[in-house]
Length: 101
Image 1 (cartoon, rainbow, N blue to C red):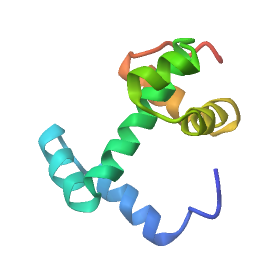
Image 2: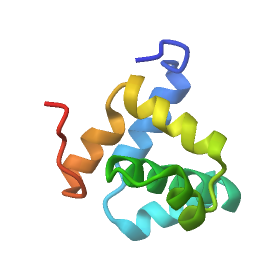
Image 3: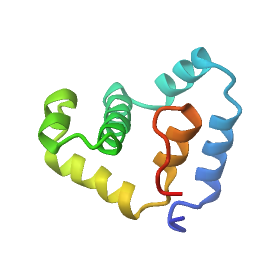
């Protein structure tokens, strides 16, 4: 975990997210805390990560999501050298089985 982000303010934000109970609460909270562009960027990165795990090509991903190759590359770096956060969530959601185990 990156210690630069482990601050009391970030911990409080994560506690707030963890107390959300349903999709409507998530929409309400994230619409208040993020701009539309921030939300769309986050969801785009999530979709890019999913498609990378599905072994889609950069070209396919760029065409489907509108993400730049720089964004796709950044997400790919997170998937390969990050904290396995994407894979943990994909597995829990039943989206993609984690073949890193």
